[in-house]
Length: 186
Image (cartoon, rainbow, N blue to C red; front, side, top):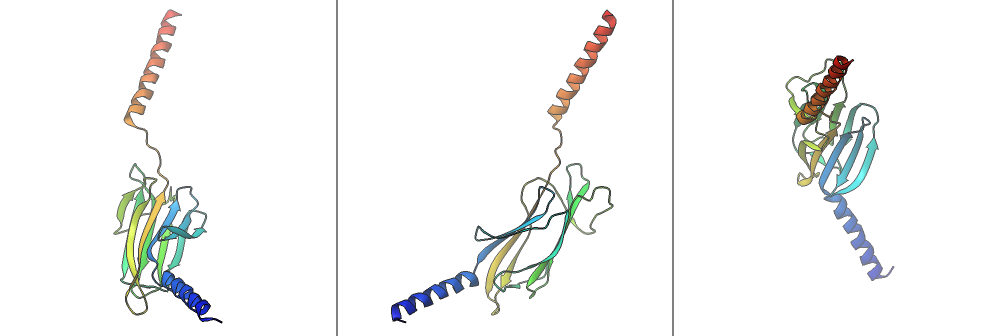
């Protein structure tokens, strides 16, 4: 093998290793907008993994990329509420320092079930992406490796606006007035 070709091969291998060794920014999104949970992972803005979980819950470990180790222990506990304040979903995200995975526990659409997490933060469904956790991973030598952001999006129940309710009420009032007038005329 000639030296130029060998150097080119070595440069390509090092470039590939470098791109895998320092991915940088990782976005993990849990999408419950359509009531079929989907998990997506983006590295530096590029979709690298999409996993449909189906159903209304997700209880699973998530392995860190690039053989990273979790920098510190954390726990995020959320009661996710509808606009009227009732609990629709719960989300628990935990990780232990030096481990290679985090744990998801997301339960959606718990209507009729008495469900609430104790010592949890309450947030409201908006239909938009909401950040629920951020954390970092380290490489085997203990140097910073990747920065993670975990987001979720859940379906938001539509709540009638006051103006819409007023127009509906005015329409009912008008219909009642016309009916009353027609009864008097008959």
